[in-house]
Length: 483
Image (cartoon, rainbow, N blue to C red):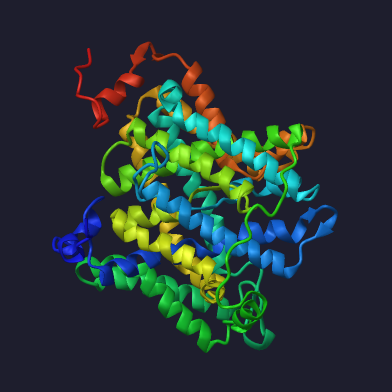
């Protein structure tokens, strides 16, 4: 049977970008898909670059060419993971506009393993990924333990935890090396001007553009910011020539390059981080549904998203030699802000990631985007994640029990990350998981309180509604009369 393109695209409409399914004219779908890539591109490759700079494999450090090959593989595996989330294989994938990429959540655990031997890291990623994947497939047996209030706390914390990333990018916290090696210090007036012009461009375009073009504000801001950065000689094009010289114009990834080594201590440590990442994934996919689709997430979608998260992480480590991949919070914020949820549209972002990996010059071009340009665009998106989380918490009702869960989990989970000395006498594995990751602390505290606090809490002699308050405010449940 022939594939009839004319028949397939006859119902294509620009308005479908706000619908999960449906065709969108390709020339209008591409920029929206590209916007997602630009929002996460650098953050996707930075973790593997940091790890490669510290790792050893069979006693030898990584060469620049090996590092470039890992960056190439990171783009390809992110694109494949995104495609599977959009268009599931069996029960693996959420069928939601979830963009996948390498996660900073795993960074400290990955460094701890890779500095011993990169093969140990690969082995731990394979095992931990398979465990999360199996948890995803069996989600119906434990899903109710992750209550809406827990998910709301996690989503809000994800947004808060990314604010410093946005400000650090806008101010170029590590400085910028521009054209001909010109150095721009962190927070210099040139850096701040570029970041603020990018931010203002995003806001102005969103405020004054008409129709669906309004939602291309991130892409517009990146273009304007990039041009301004070039005028300041802040863009270094040398990396493009160096990448082509090392890898050519077309390059296939090196598969099964690293032999996995299975260390029980590394496996336990990494698996615990996978559980934290699973909570983030639940939060991200829930935020996509509430913020982009205006509805609750289903059990099938949670199961598919976690299965993809886990099994694709195992593939990322075992086949491509990369760290784990997970849903990208930046893109959750982009969905929440733009309401662009069309799978066909975001598919072009996934294809762009794969092409960027197969054609090294494409990836090299994207990597020339200076930090202040990215920071100027991502600040709004990170804020949108916080708003989505607060909306989820509000939908759960304002009962005394929910207030205690939210207040206590935020105070402890976020608070301990502000005082590094808190972990001075704790085991290293506890420090690795909780010291720099407020999402982990908030998730654990919120889960414990959600499972242990009584369903009704007496306040000043009056029984305050707790879980029942959900029935009065949450759209999933019908209203109930309160005595």
